Image (cartoon, rainbow, N blue to C red; front, side, top):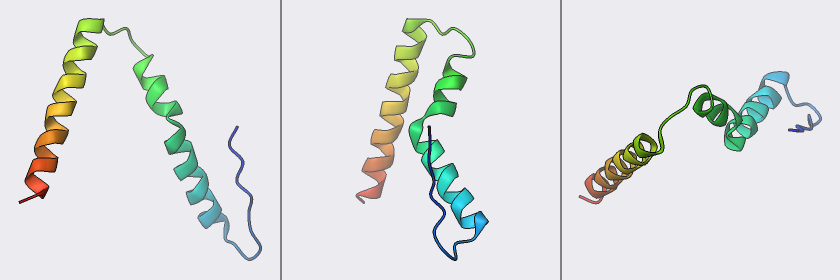
Length: 64
């Protein structure tokens, strides 16, 4: 359960923004979307490799 304490003189918008950030960090929504349908393990590994290659290329481009 996510708890966000609203501080004195803090707007509701600011507290809501902190809640959303905490919720995103937990990864609940990402997990829910991944469980929405079955994905074969071989396809999951392939996608994971593709993401790793993409991240490596991004990191290599930033160093130049």
